[in-house]
Length: 269
Image (cartoon, rainbow, N blue to C red; front, side, top):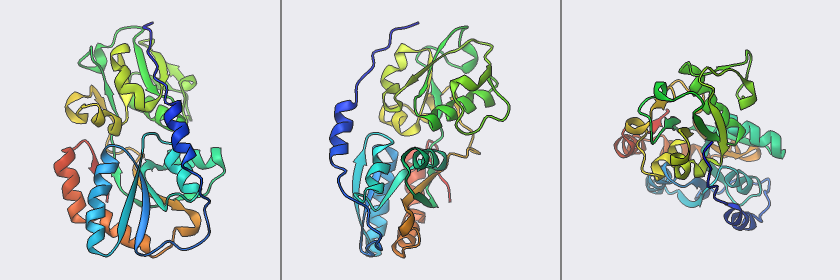
C-alpha cells in the first residue's frame, strides 16, 4: 500500500468553530439582507452571481465562505447564518440526526456530479487487482462514491443498503480494491498517492480538474444528490426565501452556470 501524506485541517476547523458563537432565535428573517454560507468553489461562484440578481430586487446577500462540509450547518444552527447553499439532502439528514438540529431544505439549486479520477489510469476498467481507491470519509459522500462504483459494475453492495452505505457494505469486490477513507477536501492533493479516487465536484474544480474531461467515471445525472438552499425549520416559510429562490433559479444564474462550468455543474430547476 502506498504511504499517504495526510494534511491536518484541525487548526482551520478550530478557528472557524471559534467564530460560530451565535445562537439561533425564533424570529423572521430580514426581508432586505441575508447572511448565506457557502463552500468555496462552485457554490461560492454561483451565489456571488445570485447576489447580483438578488440586489436588483432589493435583497442584499452577505457571503460567508467555508472550506469543509460541517461548519456551514453548525453556523446555521447556531444563528450565525440565515441560510446556506452547499449540500444535498442525504448529507443534511445525517447532520440533523448526528447533531440533533432541525435544518430544512427550501428549494433546489444544483447538482455537482461526483467523479472518479486517476493520475495513472485512463478508465475504470484499467484499475489493477488490489488498486487503492480513495473516497470521502463522511458517511453520505462515501456512500455516494460506492454507489457510483456499483452502478459501473465495479463492486456490489449488500441488498437493501441505503444512502449511508459504507465500505463494510461491499459484498462483491472482484478487483479487490483497497478502500482508503480521506478528508474530502484533501483528496485532490492526495490523488497521486492512490490509484484512483472519488472527488466532489467543488474540490475537483478547485484543483484544476475538469469533471467532464478528466474523470474516468462520472455520476449519473439521475443522482439523488441534488443540492438545496437550507434554513432553520422556524424560518422555512419566511417571505424573503421566495425572493432568494427566485434570484437563484433565474435565467441569468442558469446561463452563468452553463457558461462557467460547461456541464461540470448542472442547474436543477
